[in-house]
Length: 300
Image (cartoon, rainbow, N blue to C red; front, side, top):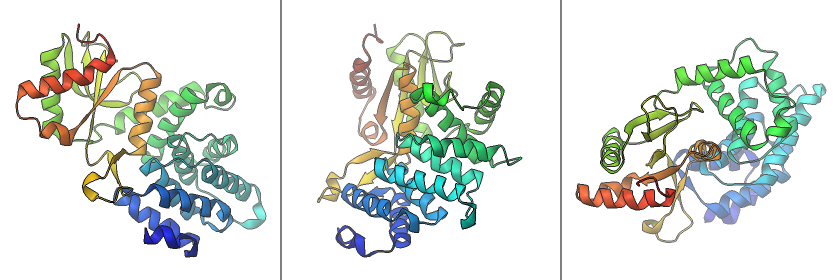
């Protein structure tokens, strides 16, 4: 609250550093982020490339939507890249992270996306992590802005290569306790007819924690379960009582779940903290059955 009251007295560099620290600690305060977003939008010209990345990384990790900030940052990135007299250039990896963060925040800035793809034509290689982000932002653009994206998306053989790299390098995101994940899978197996697997790769090549398949050879199941844990959530500081602090799903996780939902896959989430409180298998079956009831007739 002290930072919120004094946020306009911070220099943009200091404010972006504060947001970065909070997000790395998996903490967020909605009013502070919104006020900082408005302040930084008005002073986007003062942000260094590293500050732009930091602020969008913070907002995307905490899942705080701010369309004006995304537009101002995108406009500034494009403007600086076009004005050669400034001597400012963005690396391909930096542009990928900026564009990926915009996809997480559900903001479409075509000029920035086009600039990012154009920059990739000029570099022979980019880092493995950047290729992972590039595949996810491609999936987001193809799913949520298909008509516009069709005009400039990469050729299919490049997309196929991206997907192959994603499969090879995104093996297990360690999103939850292995023991809890196995326990949930065991309870699900007792409730459904089918083959149950953990850390399953869907037809989109995105991973889910637990899946129930009609056939073992299927890519997509009739039930998909994701677990929320301390590594998939951010704690909100909006409440006065710390004990009542709400948990917000991390932006990268929300993006993946959003993409899975858009393809029609039926997904429920289990909170690891709630699962740990269940005493026996009967309680766990009841808990999971109640969650699955939201998916319709999957248990029939």
